[in-house]
Amino acid sequence: MALFTYSGYDVQGKKVRGTTDASSEKAAIGALKAQGIFPTELKAGGVRSRISGPGLSFGLRRQPPLADLATMNRQLATLVTAGLSLDDALEILIEQTLNPQLGPALREVRQAVVEGAPFSAALAQHPTVFPKLLPSMIDVGEQSGRLGETLLELADYLDNQARIRSKVQNSLAYPVLMAAVGIGVLAFLFVYVMPKIVRIVQDLETDLPLPTQILLGVSHSISRFWWLGALLLVVGIVLLWRYRHTEAGRLTTDRLWLKAPLIGPLITLQLSARFSRTLATLLQAGVPLLQALETCRNLAANRVYHQTLDQTLESVREGGAMAPPLHHQGIFPTMMLQMVAIGEESGELDQMLVKVAESFEHQFDIQVNRFLALLEPLMILFMGGVVGFIVLSILLPIFEASQGLG
Image 1: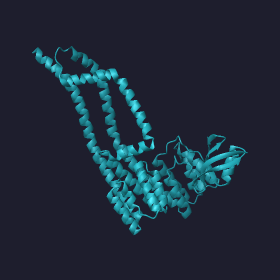
Image 2 (image 1 turned 30 degrees about the vertical axis):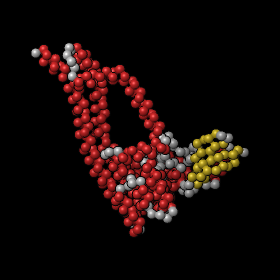
Image 3 (image 1 turned 90 degrees about the vertical axis):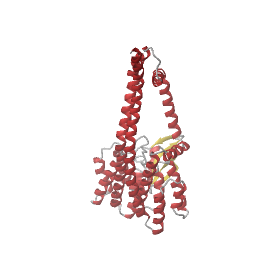
Image 4 (image 1 turned 90 degrees about the horizontal axis):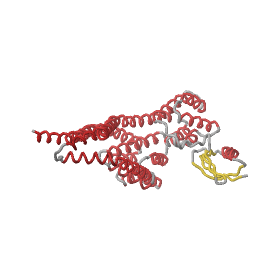
């Protein structure tokens, strides 16, 4: 017999850890499943192993697109509402799913359900594939007998989030393309055109104007020390990436993003709208406030928001109100805080949050359009200014030389 240390999830979807005696890894897994525990990791004799099958964590896989998750929930709701058992509905869904991350995960979720695990607990075993929002809402839907309605509410929520994300990505496509083309044009000018122009200008027996001297200095530096610039850029990116993945670094960079000109207000609106919409969706599905706040906290990508929601969760757990701790860091808009306070007093918090989310989403659309309307001409002016400076620097000495000849 050997002693195994395990971590995994119980039938309620809660993470558990402990030890068990078994003759082999397979026997340990079987014994734990018999106790209603679905292990994700086993450690015996100092050797750690990931469990294949229902406990697979998919740590190296990206989360499926929100649109695919929304489609999954909508199709599953249709099948369950039509009277199919959950395992049969999942089987049909697996056959129709083309997403390479979602299909294998659903297959293991179905296996866990067949073995007796609740649907929410089976989903919770794949946190990098299914957002934490799904197990929380589905758990309430299972307990209340409203699984079909809950899945439809989830589909509507995910569709809305996918729409917002798609709008941002589509809006940024043109500026990113312009920036890429501009950088390509400048690289072509400095690598292929400038060396030839430099030789012509240097052959002119005249004092070079200041713009031409600056251009020649930049061109000379780029041609001789480009490798140093590339090395410094790579080192800087690596150091920034490593710092970003520390707790202090992530908190600092997230706070800087919130304070950045033009972009900061957009991020604040988007995060506030997402928090309001998520919390409203959870509350309308019947999730208790504490559990809903914990889910929102775990979903918060920005560490400043995560800290604020952590303080809010502690305040509510101790019997306090939501609004004061939300106001503490000054990152949530005043209108939202006022609506939350009114909702708590009137007992209509979910309805107030829906109104807040709709208002912020509308404001976000307007602000994104304004930002892009300002960004595009600024990029054009910048690129035009750079190209104009290059042309002026080239023409000035030629013009002065021609005057001297005259």
